[in-house]
Length: 296
Image (cartoon, rainbow, N blue to C red; front, side, top):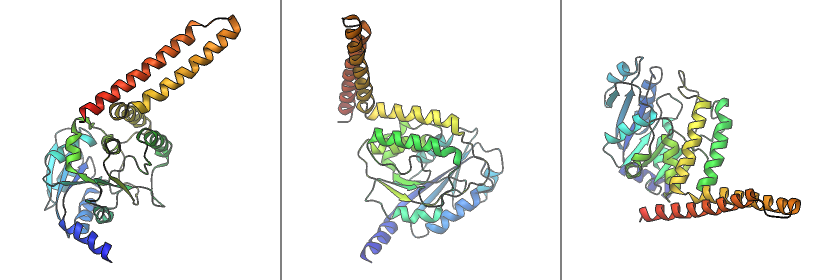
């Protein structure tokens, strides 16, 4: 009972900016906004809808809704670009982002709010039984999740959930790293986990979207993979350089051993592999020292 009272008190004290990126979401945008309003009545909030160059009736619909701030892009700039526009036009210290397509349950926002300010970011993890994640995305999501867990040394139930609450200062710190596309949430997750921010994953449902998705599983998988590796090299380069260095070193040793028993001397190929592995290890150490120095 005492814990519940504390959670309610924390929620009442908080002020949040809810950012909704919207691109051609005429079928669901009204319901999404109504759901948010109905579930955060007890706190001070603002709702910012970013119309990201929609060509349907999305802008027409949101202009008629009272109590929200509407900002429009003249062309479609991307999911991340829309959120960044919302961040620049928000005024509160806590940011909530949620998709406009009706897939995320607005009724779970108060549950996420109950974990702040104890955590710096609270993510709605789409792990509840019955979550409607498209089958085509599951293999790619699984691979990217496992890679991210290795690189961040953290268990990640949901890497790129579009429903989360986080400190505004986190977004401001990493603003220059956020891409304009769908990789915004992935970047935010990895940036927080590799910089010792307190992150909480809370299970939520995930519904079938209304309308067509603008995500391509194959195209976006390649982009996400490159992003994860790039962010790891930026934040924790040793997680990439050291394994590659060790692999080349072992291959070089095997090559030298084979050459020695076949031709009675050390081959040039094995020597080059070992020297390359040593160089990579030193490059990783130098990169790691540079990163740590810039963070002081």
